[in-house]
Length: 367
Image (cartoon, rainbow, N blue to C red):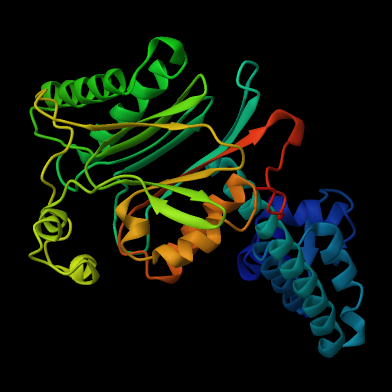
């Protein structure tokens, strides 16, 4: 049978001349003959089947060392070679699955903002975490969540022009103020947040709005500021209590006795706000203070959480005693199980005596 030049053989096998030279040097696919004078390499057409196998295995990502092991079984027949390939692929899939779990865990860890703040005067630590998620339906994320030092906050930009920029600007403004809480009040937080939305309005020429719910630890208390329909809850002794009132059309109907509270969340105008941060200075936030009490937990969340996860389920999740980062992940998982039709934002902060160390409740009720 007539031998093929290295170029013709490369074309027929789907390989390059360079690859054939490398495989020859590795002893993987040696030429059938080499001209002693010119050094030209020639291949037997019967080598094509093996060469095409090598080409396919390389495209599949099999390392050359493993290909050599597979090709060593070529004389044993197709069934043996197929078994070797199957064994490699099973091991590869197991390795990919292990790496996927590792990467997923790492991404999850990095996406969950967490912090511990120690207050030498009050004797408390604040363990906190925050995270947002786009949800199953939306194509963009207008929610923001923050937890660092003495500040936890959530903001929900209205869907539409500038919503995401507005909520992001609100959180940035609060984060800057939160570095010096002794000089900050809830009113100062609200002004800074509204000014931030105003800057977005001026820069974009649009009319963005954002909600805001934030807690700032000052001395022995939390300063709470609230605008819109993001919410704050306190969990004490396993009981979850809503601390904020929604600035919404539906809540106004409930307050006036025109709508049964049980029907509020299903109302078609549930998302219609009566006020939000819009950068005009006309907003009237709600303010409150709450004393730091050991083992109290606070949940801040957007309507992507509370509109789909019942309060009783949230109470179980927040009161379970897991650390705030795990609690945040649990709450977001609950929103996903409920369909996650909206963006999701969640922040959790726990008040812990310094002597209790990290980990908070640790699964035990110490009240």
